[in-house]
Image 1: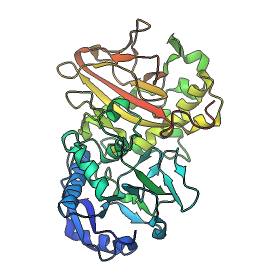
Image 2 (image 1 turned 120 degrees about the horizontal axis):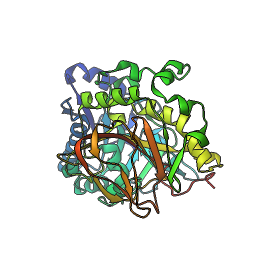
Image 3 (image 1 turned 45 degrees about the horizontal axis):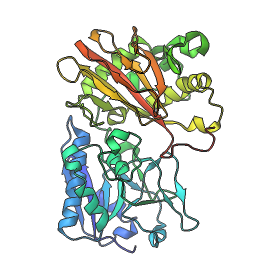
Image 4 (image 1 turned 30 degrees about the vertical axis):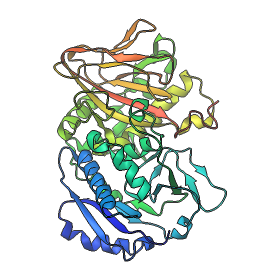
Length: 410
């Protein structure tokens, strides 16, 4: 590939003030030289991820209307970091090429050329599309569903770990990616950057010295690592244990309500009930806490000895069940190795996680207490209806890239 036909930049706010920055950065993107640039503006607001999805869709529509053979789509956070674009002159088939992403493992490299078939990845801030890819994305109907673009692209490649979401899309999009990103995401301009936390202290975690954060938010029983003493096992391989403090639960509920951008991301629900933690900039902090305090428990209780298990990654949500609306979640299996549920409040009636095979209801009685269970097979479960009040939980789904098994997991 020598040049793209057009460049689309997804941006918000005062565009005139940003044009010079965009122009300066594009000078380093050689495949975009002399290509016309179109800025797709979206409105900041409580439905930020949905507005960004709409903006990407508009870019694809304009590209098809103009019969473009190849386009570059960038979000305003794009930051060029390399210029070895010659490796894109490949004979390998493609419909989408990531120029920047966060790889979560399971990439498959080619023998030469510096390209890979990407495994599960996050990010939609820099990618190329050809005309076939444009058509596939538009024909998939995400303008009706409007899930986040990063997740939509994964589902279109057949790589999304949420099997219910994956079933809604063809999974036939052919993608490539360079081994090393050409474009990074400017950490100072992420989509969550406009959000101002209600509880700044919740976001103030220094990984070099996390003592104060841990004291406030991690249950002290878990810090002691007496895993066999603090874990209950109401069902074989389903473990219950204290994880966070009541203060953490109170503040994260208030933070989610303050953010207010409830979605129906998993497409199982009639009304919006969940928020991805990445939407308001809390995912990295939460993942750090899980890796440091939950992973040792998981590896101990499930006897996971392979080093590969330390590479588990998670999708993290806060979920709100309302008695008057979507107060339950039907029976299902999760598309994950393991699934975590953290109880955030107890001021409701009904609720809990029911496992029909075992005829057991798992329901924590204290905020901050959690349960974890295998996700893929054998543990069909559902959320019992909330009959009064609001039930808040944190839900996490753990997986490794896009492959069902990875080296070091056995």
